[in-house]
Each structure stands twice: as C-alpha cells, then as structure tokens.
Image 1 (cartoon, rainbow, N blue to C red):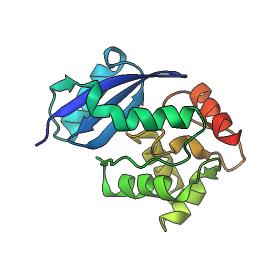
Image 2: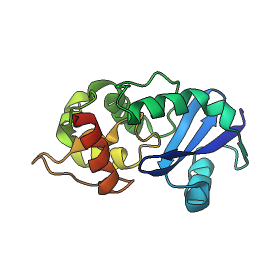
Image 3: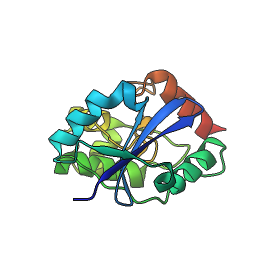
Length: 169
C-alpha cells in the first residue's frame, strides 16, 4: 500500500489538512494536523490505511495551485485525482456531489437522493454528506436544506457560508 503524505494548506478560511496516497487526494478537512490527528487516525484505521504519515509540501503542488485559483475565483472545477474511502452508498453520494452540483449552484439532500435513484434515502444522504472526506473538491458545501436554509457543515456554517458566497460572486 502506498504511503500517506500530508501538508497543511493555509487558506483564507484557516488551515486545511490535505492527505494524499500516491498521487491521489484521499482526505481534505478544515484544521491543522494537531487539531485533527485523532480524527485522521480513526479514519485511517477504519479504512485500513497507514497510521504513519510523511510531511511533503512538494507532493501537493497540484492541489495547492488549484485551491489558490479556487479561492481567487479563477477556478470553478478541480482536476486533481482523488480516491474515496467509504461505503458504496457514501461513494455514490460523493460521486453525485462531485459531478452533479456545479460551481455557484446549490441543491438539497432530496436532490442528491434523487440523483442516486434513492429518493427515500434523504437522511442517509445527509449522513454521507457529513462524512465526505474530501471537502471543497467534492462540494458538500453546496448542499442546503430543502427550504433554502444553510444546514450542517463539518467545517462549520461560517465556512459553508464563505464558500457559497465566494462561488456566488
């Protein structure tokens, strides 16, 4: 199995922890390694991934460039390779997020449930959305309540609001 590499990217909304396996992003979460280490260890154990990570900023040049362009409003899609670790249902939800919800748009949990042809699985879609391991690239921040209200976001509603506002400009 490929080693895991990490770096902390300093974004306009605070540090973001990036984790790569080989050339694929597998984990992007808000916060520093120090803040997220217990969560990352638990996540790696759950998915049978190495618990030793190597710091390497040069392995992340591609994603850093794309994140910089995104935050500068020069990029609306990401082209970096990523790999999902999760259940088959979660992966279907995340794939729908990555391919069906365009930059500057929002949708509801019901919309995602319909995209994956599981219209009664709205709550399960919400749970999968909450477990999305690749924030921003897989845009779970674009999912809002059916009533148009901002609802739950693992990074905090302030970050969700920032990203949606950035994409609306």
